[in-house]
Image 1 (cartoon, rainbow, N blue to C red):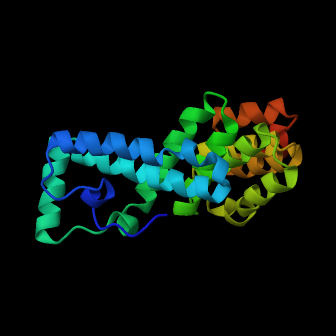
Image 2 (cartoon, rainbow, N blue to C red):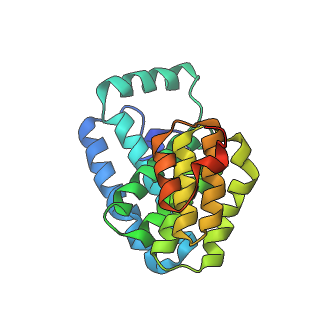
Length: 219
């Protein structure tokens, strides 16, 4: 479904130099044709790939519909310095998919959100935020615990390399959602050793029965 497309014009089925009216029409047509909801009945993989295509369509439109961004983009195309979006913009696409996932997650549409988060991870496997929210979405949409823990398993490998207190907080929440209180405590303890004054981590730790004195016995 996702053939190699060289630039944003091709993504929208247009030629270089298309008018703004043509861009608007093409975008509306592509949205109707490739909106992920049309592919929900075709299985999880078809839906995931539709999400990838849809986020790329939105990315192309966001650039080409903005005169200033389009001008800079056209200059790159003419100079030959542009790198195809499939190679350069996977992380951007991943974050677009994540943003769309968060929008439906906040509406309580957890099954749909999980597809967006899964797509974000397919584009950028190192996207820890998407991984944590995918686990939470799986829990809330009734997926099996084994599936949730499989997603969270990667955090065991990278926990020592995380340097963002908010990420420790989110991972701990994901483990709590999966019913893994001890794992959540362990994650928070690791986070608090690095960020001892982080209030959200300390508050969550106390809420689940953790003792700050265990981490800082001489405080």
